Figure (cartoon, rainbow, N blue to C red):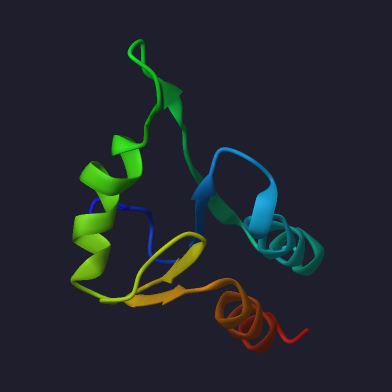
Length: 98
């Protein structure tokens, strides 16, 4: 899994915008929990369109081994990989006692 961080930190992964991961980050901030904000840039291609390989090529394949439905946003907490916005919100709320 390419998202290698100390196991004591939660990883919040999403595109390089506030979007659907903003509430997840806010929950961690509110609870005073250190976390890793893993963002994926979308780069404009010269021929048109966007290059999202930082997600689809680099990190997603490794995370699929832990959760076959992984998508953005996601939470990595040790060996647990949670995906989908509402599931991530519920997981963090339980974990952080919110």
